[in-house]
Every structure is written in structure tokens, then in C-alpha cells.
Image 1: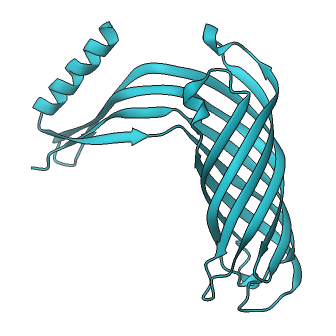
Image 2: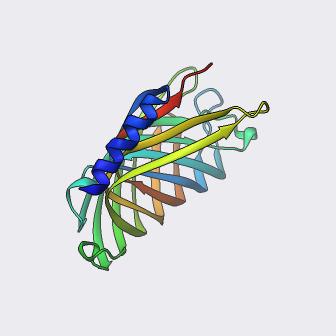
Image 3: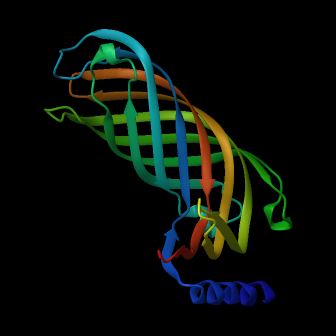
Length: 228
């Protein structure tokens, strides 16, 4: 109770100090970032089909609501956005974007988060995707994947407050801060996933190695200083 009262007091002080409150509402998220080898027909419809191989870059961001409801996440469900591209410019292929749905099942869990411990997990992951090529003709298609993910997570259920002081060249100090509450899982990990795609003439397989970042539900105010 004392923490909540202190958090409200901090908000009142910062608002009185000529700050503009910006509401922050962030759902429980799982984000991945990584890459790996892709092989098959990688060229899009502007250049015709061609057997080839190249490195691919992958980024996903998804809402995972089960992170909010339970401290023992045996079954994980998520839906969100996927972006995939090939840094090799010689392919002249356009990035793929789309939506994905993911199901994860915990094969192994260690640690009791109800006792304040961090928890290690090994997940079996299945993923389905609806993809579009961002090239001029905008081919559409599907992708599926299966993999394993290893994560270390902790349960968050507490207020957060951060005060930042920024000084300019004239010595004037601006105050920018965040005050709010977080609840749910936060963690890091890594996954390996075999995926296949068929988007127009692009028909290829890939093996991705990705870093995993989980963030809890966040509610609060970002307090920005009023410009002089």
C-alpha cells in the first residue's frame, strides 16, 4: 500500500512541475529477433523463380495474453506481426510482412515463480503465418514452422517509477519520467525454428535462430517536460 501511495505522490509532484502526461498502455508481448539460412526459390515475381540460398533476417512482435493470467505458463498462445527480408541485395527480392499465430507447450519447467524464483522453460513451438510480398505485384501466401524455445522468465507485479534528468548546453534541466504499474512475465531466451514459405513464386525453407524478449503488461504515464 505504501508503494502505491508513493507512486501517486510522485505523479502529483511531476504534474505540478509542468509535465505533460502521456498515457502508456502496453499488453503482454513476446518479441523475437534473429536470422538464419534460407534455401529454395527466393526471388519474387519481378525476377522469376530461381533456386538459391541466402541469409534471412526475421523480426516478430506479438501479444501473448497468457503471460498476464498465469505464473505457470504451460500453454502459451500469441498473435502478432512478422517481418522477414534478405540482406543480400543481389537477390533483389522484396521483404515479406504479415500476421502470425503461435502456440507453445512447455516440455520442461524449473523454478517456482509464486515463491519469487525465476523459472526456466523449454517450449515446443508451432507457428502459422499469412504473408504478403511488399513488391509491386504484392503476392500473398502462407508459412508454417515448428521449433524449440528455451527461456528464463520472472513474474512482475509491482509499481515502477523512473525519474530522468536531462541537462542541455545552457545548464537548464528537463525532467522526463515514467510512473506506472507492471504485471505479468518478463524474460529472455532463444529459439530455433524450421519454417517453410510459399508466397507467389517464392517457395523456400529456412532455419531461424532468434533471441526472445518477453515484456509484462504495463500501465502508466510518461511525463514529458513542457518546452520553454
